[in-house]
Length: 340
Ligand code: 13P
Image 1: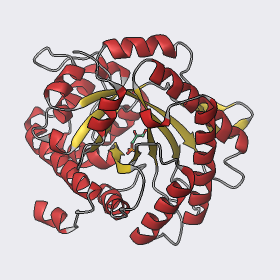
Image 2: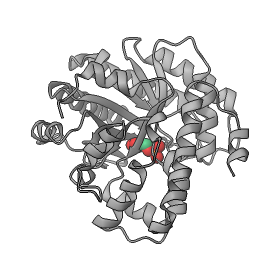
Image 3: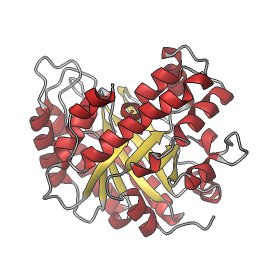
Image 4: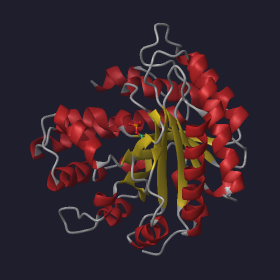
């Protein structure tokens, strides 16, 4: 496999009607997800689940790339072909989560810092050799009474910028992901404020670290009311707040912004994505990089059994199609009832 250039990777990832599948759950996260369907998390159960996802026929019509976890990049599909090559055969680009997770920030008990910079240059070289074309690093920002602090935002922004610089040095497109969590009872206004401060801090750090904005993607949350907020903003309000916030904070040189789903239900995430993408007058391409909102129905059907593979793949294909249409602002709720 000859490695594509960063320009061609970005072009492929942002192709019309397509988005990214995030299948890069860390070991503790996939264990939690599998526990919900009573499947033990073993190397083989994780392998066969992800093979089920990646070999869904026609997935490449709506999915341009897949973010993998380190273990998956080294695993093989049943036919003995390595997972990254399996993805390429299926018409999708392999990417890799390169951070090592978020831990408590010393002296800031309620806040997190993402680790994984030590040895990253060497790991990136290996990931490229294993076939990865792009990378992801996730920072976590929590909203609470006196948080996030500037210290937490700036420490995470600095780490994101160093990750992005190293990734571009290795010829791998960085997906820079500062996630503002939905947890809490905050209003949509508070989410907008925190997302704005966070994005401004991230782009200041990216500038200081000489990261080439044209060769990266931003992955961010939608601007939403907190999960436990009594008065939830509706879909048009979410779309308006999200677009306004991004216009104020994200330079036009960034080629694309992909949204995470962050614990929204699959249908809510699609509806909001559709409304956001309907706003046509923006300088970047907008799309999705969903984990849960793409996988949840498929995982529930799969339950670890080979007998359920075809039905689970059908459910994944349906969500990918709904989100692919949402990127074009062409999703309608009737697509859900027509499917069930
Ligand atoms: P969710 O869409 O489930 O939030 O996952 C996206 C992701 O990659 C988080 O890092």
